[in-house]
Length: 318
Ligand SMILES: [Zn+2]
Image (cartoon, rainbow, N blue to C red; front, side, top):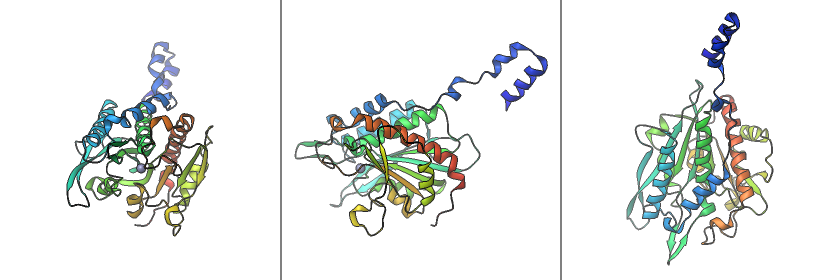
């Protein structure tokens, strides 16, 4: 607004020196980018042997949470709620022991006036070590965490219209507990969450196929996603959300499940199970880089499309 009136003034006064005040900030015009090297660097940190498989409550799990927190702080992201990005909760294991778990919840405020919030999520925990073997979980889910961080970097440089909350969840492998803790929290209740966009296993596919799941429950999301231009190097498939199809139905297979249960529309991105699924061979070397790059770009395009469309979504039931 200020700039537009200045342009007018310049026009009226033909005072050329004012013209420079109206040059658009180059940062505002920059197309949002996805930097694959950064994504791979995040994966190499999170899926390093030193992280010992990032099991919730272990030194590796704590180290992974610290890494994600430091990345969010370096981008100057705001806490999603209150004063802290960390949301801690107690994870009670089957044997009755309990450990502290930590979600990282950061926010980029939108430029518009709508209160609808998009929650972009990915779990950073994995299985830990078993019998001396480290389960590095590069695809599951250092990859989704890496895309989440890269989306945050990209959107922080050119903020969206709506608030976007970046939720890096702990304890997914323990039964979606991090996402549940968030959905049950005051932080969640205080927000008008219009969409959860969850990523879990997005970097490894020999067939270069990424599943988009959840649109059977929320068909209006399929329309938005189908409007996103195809990205070279990948194919988008819809499915794995048919009720009654057993393990083929991924509706509650990852952190989007608690959002769906709470009546929040979701879309989940992930690949078909592969040989490295919950296997020690889920290492960074097995990532298919061109596909990973394409998924990063595609998910950013989807976030942008959802940012434009979210105010027209129908109210979904509780
Ligand atoms: Zn996972």
